[in-house]
Image (cartoon, rainbow, N blue to C red):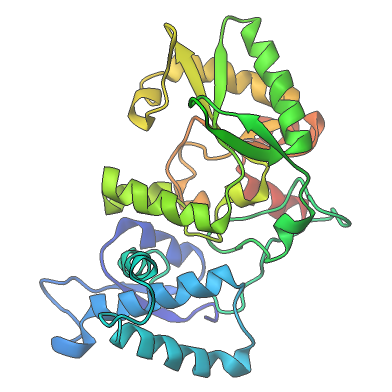
Length: 313
């Protein structure tokens, strides 16, 4: 949608950022002033848009002259969502995602830029690649990743990670061990299909609102780059892998965060930057940016990657 467009949404707080992005934003409170009863109920409109935007994010948009055709197709799919159009399991996922209201009312831009590159050209990976809700991963990005298989903190479970990122992680892990801190890998590279399962799991375990603020829509997760790692600390011989447990360890994570830039990592999701990143603070989510110099510069600036890249550009 063009900057300055008028957007109506419900009262979900995450939509506050629309004004900051140049849109005229108006609230529609369900109990007072819905658009209309019946077919034009605001939730129905949001659900169609969410299904449409999620699918578009996966394929990086479409040509503007084909937009109306795709819109009509997804309107038909939504109106027939209760019929057995696909295999049962796939349809279950489709319905689940259609209720997660993340890109409602113009928050997704058709044909949006995918996987922005800021001054670093050539073969992937671009260690400053930006992947978020507004910049989905390009379809062919993973094809040129040099992934290695590594152990995680879970018995008999492995993960994949970009090779240079893993080498930097081993350096970080070794330095922390000298300080008496032990960390392990919870997750690293994720395919789009695996991200779908994560979203469903978090929705079932923590609820829809928490999942919205914590888990990226498939196609928009930084984990698709192979450069992001969710780490887990070991405390008193026990891996603290539950999010709520890790949030109770601010002093420990503070020590870990001080070590990150020395090995080319940044803390990706900072406190107070939720409206910019689109996600809540996560002390465990670290991101490799390719060099110690760049990591230190970003860390010292107090900026998140989105802000840093805007200044760099």
